[in-house]
Length: 449
Length: 78
Image 1 (cartoon, one colour):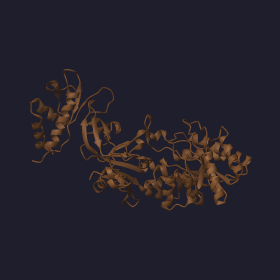
Image 2 (cartoon, rainbow over the protein chains, first blue to last red; image 1 turned 90 degrees about the horizontal axis):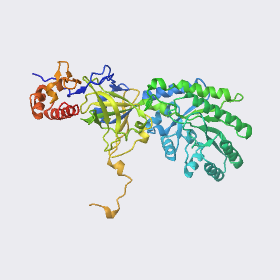
Image 3 (spheres, each protein chain N blue to C red; image 1 turned 30 degrees about the vertical axis):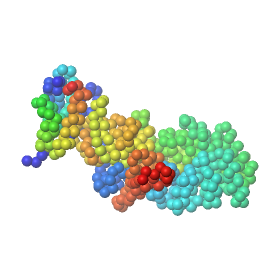
């Protein structure tokens, strides 16, 4: 006689109220494939855990965002925000779609150049740009966005050394009604500091101001803040052109558009609270039209990162063990921890099974494999009883995680891209000991053998 | 042991007459409770589960221990 299918034992105390614990969930969140490729097959072939990106989704999101702006304004270009995800393959998809590079450090600048992006197609932002990197950026014709008065001095020195006029932009900050105000970057409009910077640049006589930049925050849920930002930037542009000899060729309104992720502490789902790309585009372009003087339209740059990549990335992780906690919740230990999920600190992720499971749902906690109590991917979720090897898919995780992840006690996993044609490419190999120890040196007298 | 007094119907709905609390159990859990009430050891329960279901006796043993942990937290056994 064949044996019956086994379901792990479950007992749930029935609480009063509307708890769904103790009954089979009427609808389980299940994702069986990514980009048309079975997740089971991906894990069988490439192991677990895995980051998986979907090429088609990235391209579609880019096209949709570009269309939202280019149908409203004649002169638009996107700069791919490297810090959001600087894996080569990810950057290359955006560059193929037409985005230039937006970098915030000499390291990111090197990455963009290494990938084949010309200096003229790099926006160089950030509060600290080492002198050598500024020199290289000037020589290669990058768009340099000045953040401090010291940087004006550095660039003047470079311009004199190279005996050439250097076109530059300045970063602005301002009150857009959103708090905390990102006032540590660039020059403040309201205090007059920004106009002082313009005067300072003009007085130096070797730099030519041709652009204005700002970036008002991250995961901005209010398009009106962009309306205020852009209005103030265009009004400032008008003042600069009136009060100085400079002609502004472009304004860069930065990024910060939200993705369809759920912020912790926000009860409503992202489908309700997150504005569409059209909402952002409408706010920004209408602010330009309402404030511009004459018929000359400066080029508009956008540096949106999260909105374009977050939802194209997934983390597949597998259950390795489970136990009952003293508060009677079930703890699942999975093979991916919060060191891989920097955005865990503010997001409540979608967590999906890879197949429907029968059985009673239990209040559960998802813990990672780190030897730390804070390694909690989800502290309150109803799950049917899972066994070792069952998989969970965590999303959206495409933004910031593969740049801010931390190597801690375990190797960082493989990153895959499911291509448009359904093939699968490894875009970053999993680490091994040699990656971690390559830069270490052991003094001779400390050698063990 | 409150577990002995638990009234369980075939759908896994259980009533504890001592406290008035109600519980939901799946088929495996019902089986374990029945065997525990008969006084069977954890190892023997695991063995019986592995004979009836597609599960190794080692995995079943762990599950029985984990299940007993839950029963303790609910005050059904001491």
